[in-house]
Length: 178
Image (cartoon, rainbow, N blue to C red; front, side, top):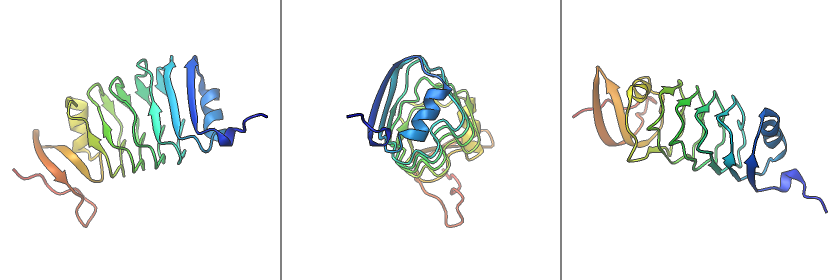
């Protein structure tokens, strides 16, 4: 018998992909947990491409991927891991509400949209993440919100470091104090 799209939990794709392929995945593979795009030639993930795929846990991105557009993975509440080490641009709210998202490497990011990682409460930055001007500005604009285990904030041109940097009762991040 034929496999129903809603029964597919893991998908491995090779070769070329287009927006229609991504729209099909989002609309029909509603129980997808693992999406491996490593062997595709994607250079960008379009706006809202995988938005709201609440069962999606793991995504393997191709080394050719440079850009993730606005809200591409927003609302993927179970998304735990993906490799962003080659990505240079992340759009607004690209990973908003990805509450389970863990360690990410943003070393190559040159453009980081507002609220890119808002409400990513488990988010940590990979130890080898290098902080360029885009990330410093992003942190200064509170792009990253929620509990961040390794936090760096940009204040008056000074980068201050502090471990275990929780949200205050008002929902604002505590001031960095040395």
